[in-house]
Length: 383
Image: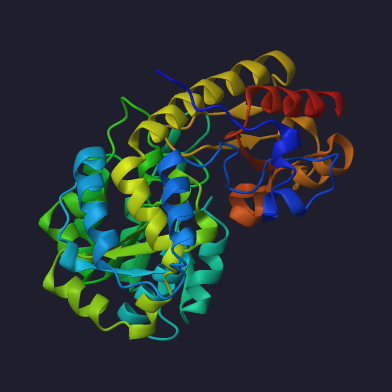
């Protein structure tokens, strides 16, 4: 398999995105979910062509992106969608907030499952909801699973929605179909809504069975809404485009009740790039997945050789590693110590859930093998 190679550091440091401008030049920045690979050629060509024809106005709506995603979802994700049941918006976070506003009342409980992508805490409150934490079961050694009994109890206690992360950021879990079907049954029993963030869906490693939530059962289609995008898989987060997908009359009522401005917030460049990614980006994505597979395995080897006390479970999806650095004695927030003493920036563990994130960090391994090796060496030298 042809690998997609990461850009060299001197080229990466010319980028002006948050990842490359937030830290001094002597820091290796590995916390932000942005890849170091060059943009896919079909996306580059589509954006250059748009600039050449001065095509920088408002996006023309959801249909083109939805139809491009229809083919991508069928061939890459095993998911048949109806393009007429898609409303686009600027990004996944915005889609989650807007859907929560439709399916909950102010003050309603919304379940999230720490350790979890930190903005989920804020998205719930932005939607006027109340965060209800139901931590994942298990851990690095034995693996994780959804706490279905805990979720059931939280819904019984009054929660009205859940934000599912499928695949799960930061632990790289890909929930199996039986767990998702059981979750859908719980949602049906309590007449609540599952808003499934599936932006990392295309980043599942070959050989791992990935199940989009809306494919799992009639109950999932009735009580689920999916929000997804090309942004993570194709590294185009700054271009602002995402899809809200439904598969039932119940879901349609919530989606079509969105304010019309929600759709208009998708950018023209985001629309153009997403269409190019979904239609023509497959070979590039295959190369990225091969490189990520190499790096997730390399990280395990590097840690075993240089930091054997650090606990790591190789993720089945995403390009993110959830590391337990407790054995190093660097405190509840080892990312702070790593930044000061190793000049390596990592995701701050407690931000992913105070109770489950202490002593942990998130590391982005969508970089060159050389950068990954240098990061681990710096961490080892800082002990």
